[in-house]
Length: 49
Image (cartoon, rainbow, N blue to C red; front, side, top):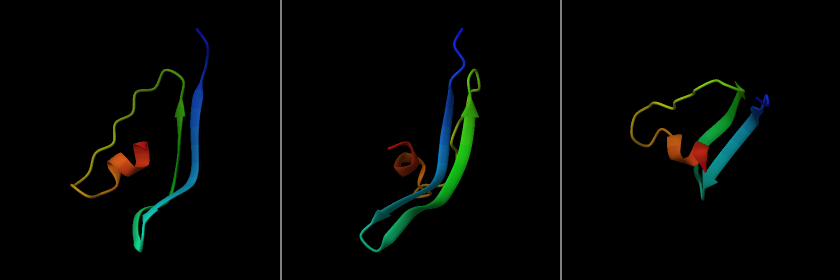
């Protein structure tokens, strides 16, 4: 099986003046299962987009 990774470094997502995601960094190694949890409006969907 191939080994793949996802690297995210200093991700920022803004909607006009609203900052939805601010300097998010993480790594997901091949074979890992990751979930995003948080309150409504925390930036989960913005992070995935």
